[in-house]
Image (cartoon, rainbow, N blue to C red; front, side, top):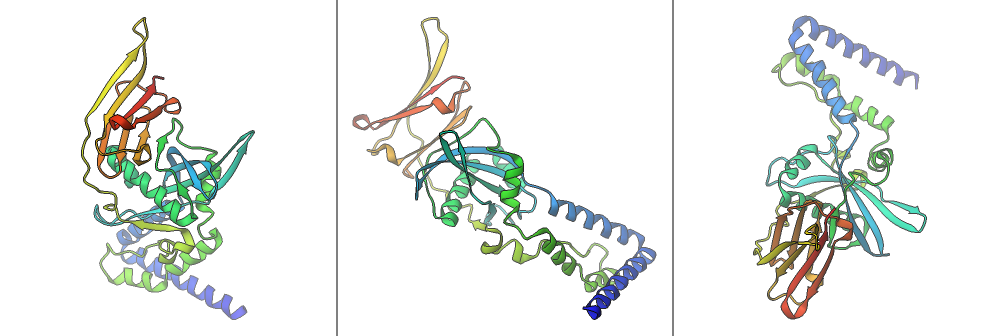
Length: 315
C-alpha cells in the first residue's frame, strides 16, 4: 500500500513537471491543452436536458400508460455521419402511482445535435421517436403501442428524477474519475511536447463506458432502418364551426384503399401537426391550421369505405 502511494506520488510529480516544462517551452500549446481539458471535462459532466415528452402505452407484459422523456445529453456520442448509426441511451424505467393513475416514465437521451436537426424535420423527429420506442422494447422486453402523441409539457416527472434515472446507469462518479485519471497518462503528456501542437491529450469517457450494452445501454440503430417509400393518400381537411361560426374542431378524412383494419394505422398528433403512417403503404404529414387538444383527439376507421376519420377539438 505504501509503495503504491509512493508510486502515485512520483507519477503526479512527473506530471506537474511535464506541465511546467510545456508551459515554459511552448506557452501557446500549454494554454490550448488546459483549455481543451476544461472544455471536454465540462461536456462530460454536463447533465441531460429535457427536450420533449411523448405518451404511448405498454401493451405487454402488463398494459400501462407510458411517458417517454426525450432528452439531449452531450455525453452521448454524435453519429459520425448521416449514414452512420445513431447512438442513444435509455434510463431506468420508473413506475409512478398518482391516486388511481399508475404509469411508467422512461427517459431516452440523444446527442443535442441529433435532436436539434430533428426539430426542423418532422420525418426525422418521428424516426428518432420510433428508434427510442424500438430500443425500449428490445432492452426492457416490453411491447409498446405503435401510436403516440407529443404532450404539451417537455418532461413527465421531475428533472432531478430524470437525471438520476439516466445518469444512475453510468459509472459511479468515483470510478469515473479514476478512469479519467488513467486516460490522462504520462505518455500522452510527453507526446504533446514533441508532436504537432494541435494534438492534445484528451479526457474522454472510456470506450467501455459508451459502447457496452451492459454498462450504459447505448444502442446504435441505423437511421436508414425506417426509411420506407410510402404513398401520400387522398385526404380532406376541414374546420367544423358551431351555429355562431365559432371554430370547434378539425376533421380529417383520409382515404386508404387496400386497408381493412384500424390496427394497421399509426397515428401521431401534436398540438400543431399530425402524422399518419399505414402498414408501410401510406404516409401523410400535415401542419394543422389551428392548435388542437391532443388528449381529446379521436379516430375511427370506416371499413366499408376504407376511410380513416380523425376528429381534433381545438384548444
